[in-house]
Structure formats: structure tokens, C-alpha cells
Amino acid sequence: MKTHISGAEYGGAFHAEANTQMRFVLPGELVETDPFTILKPSGARVAARCPHFGACGGCDYQHAAYPEQVQIKLDILRGMMTAAGVDELPEISVETAEPWEYRNRIRLRVQVVDGVMRFGYNQRGTREFLPIAVCPIASPLLVRAAEALVVLESPWLASIAEVEFFASEDALQMSVFTRDGRTEGFAAFCEALQVLVPALTGAGVMAASAGFGAKERATWGSAGLVQEVLGRRYWVTRGGFFQVNRLLVPRMVELVTAGRSGELAWDLYAGVGLFSRALVETFENVVGVEAGEPAALDLARKQKKVKDIQAIQMETVEFLRRAVPQRERPDLIVMDPPRAGLGAEVCTFLGRIGAREMVYVSCDPSTLARDLKMLVDSGYRLEQVRLVDMFPQTFHLETVVFLSK
Ligand SMILES: C[S@@+](CC[C@H](N)C(=O)[O-])C[C@H]1O[C@@H](n2cnc3c(N)ncnc32)[C@H](O)[C@@H]1O
Image (cartoon, rainbow, N blue to C red; front, side):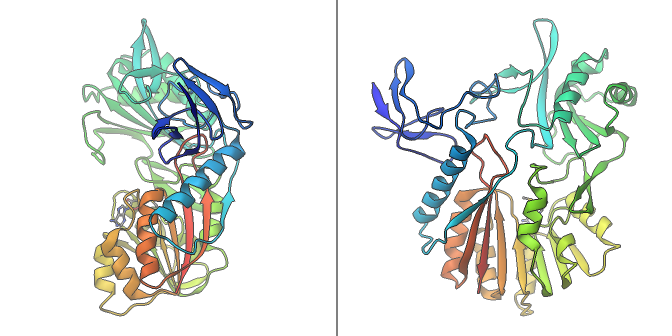
């Protein structure tokens, strides 16, 4: 059957005729579905850089030239905002950087294939193991570390189910998830890897079955590393959150904080204080609210020396429930929630607070659109919307929205 491709939707799929969806096609293309053949390719179609593209669950858009990827995301974002009833949408501007080698963190599976130890990801849409040789969206140090790991002659390799590497420009941290909870000999294993990858400064081990945020069973070296952004040094614990696109973080900090000043700023969902640390240079007082460990501890520990940042470990909704009756009214509220977004309760509190300016950093356009509808209905104006392409080659979409009241 022949079908025309008309547009894209959030999640990596594209609209074909008869209400069907297809992957790895592009708007404007004519496609034969069985067997899959592109009859009329889009002018934006390119050869994928990665040999694993398609089979690997990671990337969605390598078959599109980079400007087309950005256009696809713009159309998706605009469509989702309109569908959620967000009216008077300003023009959406775009921030991009080099679209390859940008990730500072990768999590890999480790498995024996045909008698050889390999690292890899999940195959697209399954839990099947896909051995990989390259990952062109990852910082080269991360791939070098994985290559070094699988050639180590160590009984440890048989224990490892997954490994996560997290890098700064010159340091590397490793989290190992084992099949059997093994801990003995971990230090010797890390030292052997450090010989091959001198950037390795610390590592921890936990059982693969342990849930998110589980305590490490053994550790080696330092517990985290320093990420430097615009001359500011942030301490980030191995498992702690840090923005994943190393090439766009400085621009993101500038966008959110530059040119803003006043008496009081709140940085909700503050993480390690990426924005708080910049805001404290131009605001009299800054409150950073962060629920999770270890990010909250990193924020508190490192901010102690910085005047006027008040680090609070609490859920945002709890913080607002206490702040609203006290009639606190910050000049600026920055909020950068996880994918779940703000939710109705937080939006209601923000409506009552009526901050002069708000900056909403979002990694999920569906929850963003839902929240913006509520914020606009409570009297905030949309001043600017920016697509900051933190996740090139994938469908993931980061947006920064500026609001005022
Ligand atoms: C997307 S990250 C942003 C962190 C920081 N703004 C940055 O750019 O590095 C979201 C942060 O919100 C924290 N978090 C998740 N749910 C929260 C909640 N209900 N209240 C406060 N913080 C929360 C997470 O631990 C994480 O550090």
C-alpha cells in the first residue's frame, strides 16, 4: 500500500494515511508500506550516522538533516500547545549546539555475545540486548570507558548487568549494577579500569534489582565530580541529576538567568543549584527547593559558602503550601520539574502567588502544555517560548517558557 506522510507526533512516530503511524519516514514522503520502500524521499532525508540507528532504542531522527529535526520538534510543540488550548502563542525561537557527542551520561548493558564480552543498549521496543560498537550522541570519553571496561580481565565482568558512566570535561564516574550483589574486589577492579581510563575518579556498586535511588553497597574513589558551567563549579554526586547535554548547559543557564534581578528569586526543583548559583549574583535572596537526595545535599553542601542561597529539601507543593499563607511574592520563580510537570495543585498556588516573572524549563511538552493552560488561565502572560534542543537525534523535547504577570 502507498501512503503519504503528513506530519510528526511526539514520541518519534509520523502520521501516515488512514490514521496510521510510521517511524523512520519524514513529512512529505511517499512510502510503500509492504515491503517498506521510500518511493519519494524528502529533500531533508540523510544517511544515518550511526550503524545501529533503527535497531537501537535510543535515536529517532538520524534519518533527517538536523534543521529538519528542529522543524519537526517545532511543529510538534506548537501542535501540542494549541491542542491543550494555550492561546496567543508567541513565535517559538530555537537554541541549538553541535548535535553529536553531546551526552555526558550513558547507561549500558554488559553481556557475553558469542563468547565475547560486549556493551550495548536495548533493541528498539524490546528488552532484547543490542550490542553496540559506537554511540555518536555520547561524549567520546563515555564510549572509550565502555570499550576499556569490556577488555578488562576480571571476574567482575561476569557480575555486571549494567553500567552507567557520567562525565565532566576531565573526570569520569561509574555506577555498576551487578547481577549478584558482589562487592569483594571492587576497588581492585576500579583501579584496573583507571589504568586504562585515567579520568575515572570514582565508582559505586549496587544490585541490578535495587530500585531507583538505592544505596551503593561498595564505593571507590570520590562520590561525584565537579561540572563547571560559565565559570561556576557544581558538585554532582554520581547518581544525582545534571543536565545531560554538556554543549548546551551554559546557554541554558544564560537563557534562564541572564538580565534578571530583584529582591527574591525561587528556584523550584533546584537540583544541584544550576540556576540558583547564577541567580544569587543578581538577587538579594535566592531560595532553592529540591526534594531528592542526593541533589538536595549537593545543593546544601556546596551553597553553604555562597551568601543568600537558602537550600530547602522539600517537595515543591509542600513549600508552596507554606509560602502562600505568608503572602511571599518573589520577583522571579524558576521551575524545572521532572517529566510529570508541575500539576494542578502547584499551578493553583503559583496563580495565587502572582510572581512578576516566571521561567518554566520543561522536558515534556505534554505536561508543559497542560500546565501552561492552567497558568495562563490564572492570569500569567506567555512572553517567550524557546525550544532548546538538548536531545538531538531523539524525539525528546526541551522547552523554556517565559511568563509574566
Ligand atoms: C529536571 S531536574 C532539574 C534540576 C536543576 N534545575 C538543573 O537544571 O540541574 C528536576 C529536579 O527536581 C527534583 N524533584 C523531583 N520532584 C520534585 C518535587 N516534587 N519537588 C521538588 N523537587 C523535585 C529532582 O530531584 C531533580 O533534581
